[in-house]
Length: 263
Image (cartoon, rainbow, N blue to C red; front, side):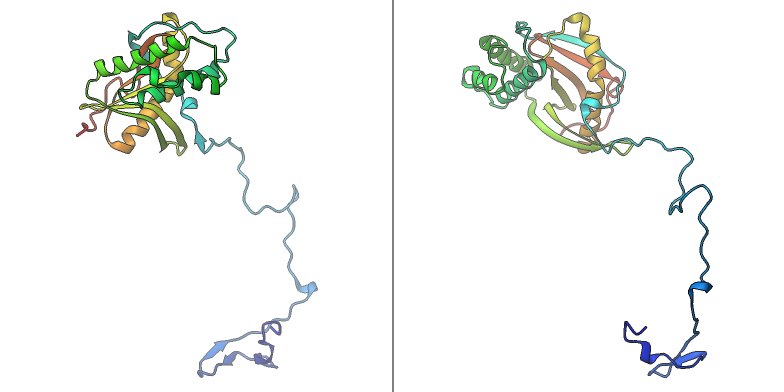
């Protein structure tokens, strides 16, 4: 009490109340404490004191963030396949991941350039800067870029194109999904979701591809529909190196949700 300047205000003798300047009275009791009068809590026989009760069984928690590419797998299958251009031969010593990033960059640059010709896109420079120069024919890749754009324009004429769209979505289990959508097409009936893959898989491996990336497509679809209120009507994998586009059916779009139509 002396430390905070109240020692002189306390009564010298025991009393039942303190009289304030306002003439109000405050109940008062004095207790004298000593080490011998302390009541100590005994430590439990099995160990130290614990603040919180420990559960009988500890369970692993889900990570807060999750990449769409590591989303929970879903049932998926190939509903349609469309040839696009011609398959491109790839040097067998090329790092697949590095090539995939480079082809992705070339597609993103080309499809975002409007009606620019393929020759105006610095494909050789992109391949060189990303460490895969010589992995495939530059001319062949340029032809494939044009073939992909023609296919998009012919299949969904007049659709709005939105490339490299960042998206974040809180899933039903509380995890935060964050990623980047390769291409979204806006049509009168809803969204068309397209993801680029640089693999050269043949038709015998297409269903494996659908099963591998079905969870990713479903996760992106859920995020798009939650953010826009507009249904994702179709999901596609575009494989420019393999010269193919695959329409993938997942659990979420086997029956397209009747959410809303794009205005």
